[in-house]
Length: 349
Image (cartoon, rainbow, N blue to C red; front, side, top):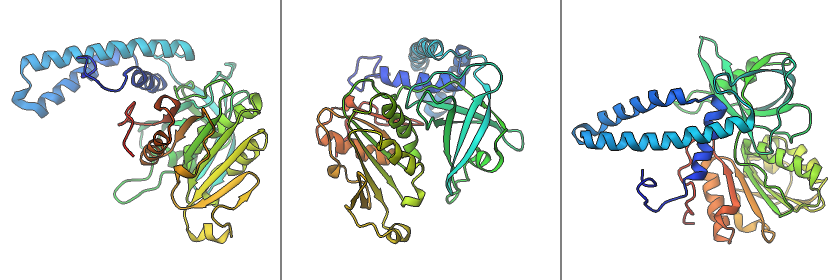
């Protein structure tokens, strides 16, 4: 609303693109906007009470439809680019391999069922997986593609979301871990997402935590195949080496590059201490640290572009540190599966 009134704020186009990609990955179409608008305005009326005068109602109705029209147009462009039909977003894909990466993480290799070709995609994109759960519920979740394009299949790498306190275990991640095996078929939407690897030869900084390593693996694989001369600094934070999913693959891909450095941060837990790796030890172009990631300890090549993926607090702190070290905000891209509360806003460190 502030944008429509000309108030200062973050640029709205990147936000529109991000939402449009999310919507396209779920099959959202123009026919759903009247339903959303009617219920949104009704909910606002319940909350605002008498403050929701006819004039206020009409103003918000106009604002909603201006925003909706912009989104519908952007979604149409996304659907055209990815070759998807919003009325039929799902295609059947067969699981051809199931690989246990860690006790909490499993990778699934996927190929289309039938004659349809493998869709093209960009390193950093994701797919949406829709599953029918016991009890009849149908749920959809988005997972980054964890392998570079051009390999003849897609791969997703899924961390099981555990129950914590009153929060239940992840319904879809638990279903995939416990019930999906080689030969099973999953409903999957075409690859989407706007946080993709920029072409060129500029140095890259890939920063991840936990399962956020997945798009970084796809980016690194793409670079190793097409731009091995590109300088890459990778940084990853995890609980311990044993919980670091795709760690061996990360090192193998890095070994194919001319200039690759890996910095890892692991909690000082017993598992990490048992490895006998001291803080700052260097082996095979890797430097290990203990504790929380320290942005000031990262080497920053001149002109580097940064990509971040991990929990929101982690990305917020890393982004703030990179901004403080002089990386322009437009050179920092990050993947958020959910609302982005600081889009375009340089946070204070």
